[in-house]
Length: 306
Image (cartoon, rainbow, N blue to C red; front, side, top):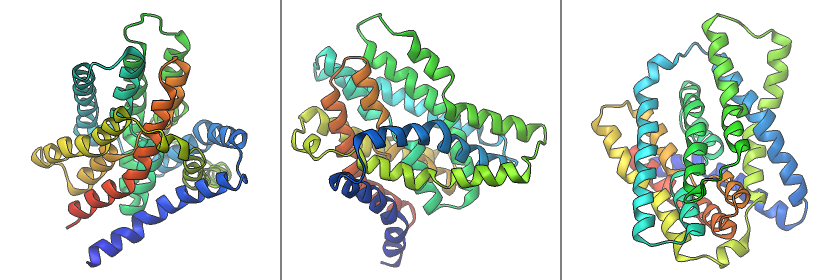
């Protein structure tokens, strides 16, 4: 009982901040236009600086977590292939297939995942979890383009460009490169970065809430339900026990569970719209998975912490 109460006190505030975003949007205090600008600030400035600061404050190297990172990457690819097979068995249309697949494998790890890890685990764990971003975000984008573009061969070059110049990936690489040469950020610059980085998680969580649409829940389809269940239940249920079997530490297993169990990323909706796929389905998956992840993540973390 005590473990459950402790877990609630750690996890619930994160989802309450998301709920505040929903309320602010409903009251029209936050507009859609403001939320678009806020999202740009988060992903292009605040979150990259947040990752840079967390990593540059430590002397971690990729070598120490190579197996941990490799497992996350390989598991994502395997699950992507599995979802492709499932989508084929469901005989989904071309417009729906890619959205279904993306919704099932692409998690909001950069925001919800890091927020959960920073709350449940210590600072060192947050740094270790940030390492995944340099590998996972490009992989997410590449797999999403493959899923959404199929069967068309017409993939716009700007998607490839976005993969290569993603600010989050660049910030992680720069931080590790500077660590490697022993460079220390001057105090004035470090403090400035710290102020901006402090905006990241609360602003990002509010932004997720402000993007939430009740209409997308009302118009839910079977494809959205299945994609959500595969994302929140099947993916963590399939790969977390394997992580146990392979002998990862308790800390790494919790990070991996959160990585697998995160709700679907908002970016999946943006990419679906940009590539002329079923944007309504993508939005429904994001909304439903965010709502249900409160339950699934809490149950999973409780079982892991017994």
